[in-house]
Length: 294
Image 1 (cartoon, helix red, strand yellow):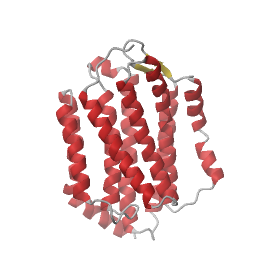
Image 2 (cartoon, one colour):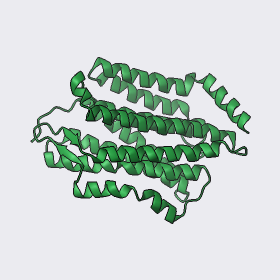
Image 3 (cartoon, helix red, strand yellow):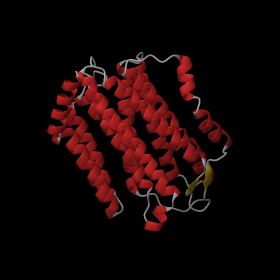
Image 4 (cartoon, one colour):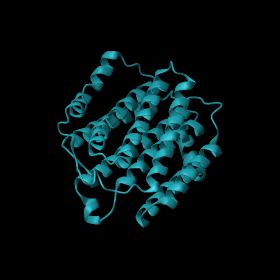
């Protein structure tokens, strides 16, 4: 049995991110389940929710075998980036054949093999349930980065089209920033873990994992509300969404464990506030730049 304590902050932050992600995912799917754009958005948001659930289980369980199982399954998050790539093609108005989808998914065979066989996954320490990543994490990060580069290339190609609607260009700018920041955050998180930097600095990096997920979902919500992604006429408007995010950030702030995490959390929240309310200059620039491209 593993010996460790699970802070209340973990239960609060993880559960709220899971709930809001599932709400957004099923709202998108319910809007138009037949459209591949909605389905792919649902898939990658669902993967984020399941990934977060799996990490929460690792925080809750004291059984090393259960912890190792969910540690292995967490590597399947690579599928998130594949579905975001499919989503990018849909948003750009490009039809993907099943053959091309299969080719794009082919590199994930390495991840699936590693998860199924346990080869290269790493290990979980029996006393603390702390995990040690294997070589497959390097493969996964390179694969994820490749999918993100592909997604950004597809979206920017659409952005540069003279006849593209300016609102679509605004959506693309936010989405490019969202997926780029998400993958870079995850790479930084894993690199700090692999290089044992957290041990040298004597900090616990696990709580920082959730911030990347929350920030990505916040940007998705912003794009839906502010720039009409998926054309939600009945979706609660900006004030309601911002209030939910504020409650989440507020609870995480008061339950945070270290001054460093307070600082980083505050920086994330200030960024969200600026994105929702204080970005008049950004909006003018987006609209002006979008108009110039047309």
